[in-house]
Length: 123
Image (cartoon, rainbow, N blue to C red; front, side):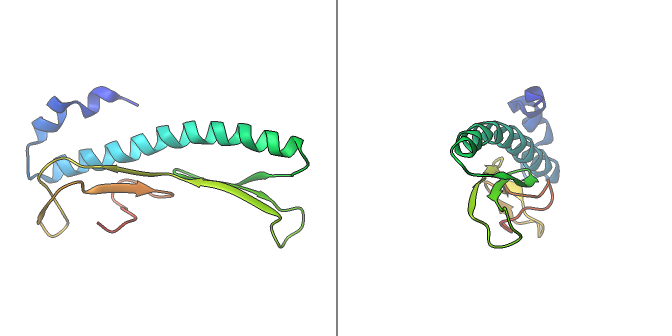
């Protein structure tokens, strides 16, 4: 992640009450989500490896930012064991605006699939 892109100076350069500051906060939330998902994915893979050594046959089922899912699905249905993690990330910069131009705080929140501009929580 390019941390300098999200410095206080970078945010201040966009000013308060601007769509640009909102977009920067949205991008930060998404970039941070990718980093946290990577870390969680690595650890979950280790856990899955240990479970598979103990008789399970867990395989990766989903692969989207924030949504990591393994299933032990020897047959089409039902799934014998499911193990997953859902990561949600939030970021905001004081006095950013929503789509209607209203001033809000902590605007961005991402989880699971999505990218900047597709805020899953609607807020």
